Length: 167
Image (cartoon, rainbow, N blue to C red; front, side, top):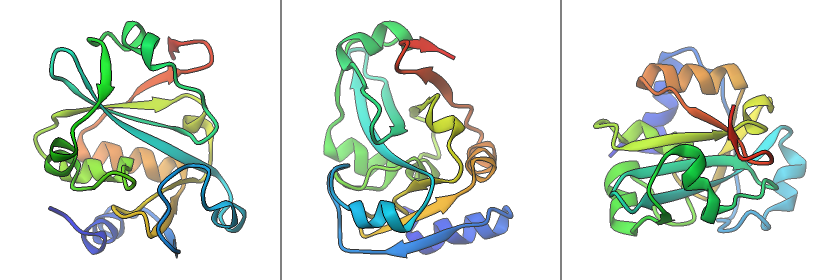
């Protein structure tokens, strides 16, 4: 599994500018108001899910976005969704609960996880994610996030959670 240092080396190799703020571990979106104040841009919540068909999903959204998990499966074309098991999270994204991040996709070399990006987050610039651990926050530009995903061969499904439609 790739580490934080590997992630930063990947960013550097792909010309993705990044800044990181180390901080005490945070486990919930509601925590870390001082971090949000210190780092402009979109702060995220990330959900690791598994559907009834066994497909894994990663949802990255703005922290304040409301996600209706009971209806989401009809929008993204999945089976009914539930939270994914910790063992699968570690196996595919290389992170533990509380540290789920879009940057974990660097560890999903087999592309087992489908990535859903909140339409509001897709407009935010910069965007802030944990760098594979919840004891830091890393900011990249929106273009940097897209470059990261493209380098991994990932095209996100963009969902407008307010309208519950694929954008």
